Image (cartoon, rainbow, N blue to C red; front, side, top):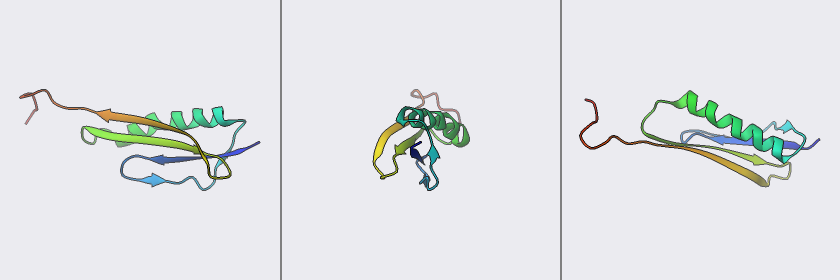
Length: 83
């Protein structure tokens, strides 16, 4: 079974997966990467009005096969920001 590495970045911290996971194929690794994004967002929210969360999949050779990004972009309407 191939080994895949899921690296993450939450705009503050980059975490390089040094251990990896044995998964059946790249699609399973993609599923793991996508599933990580909401958890990352929950851990860091709320913390401002903008943040980007990324998870990427590398194979055993170090080639990035897939990258998923979740972006929060928010702003107050003119004159409606609470004090």
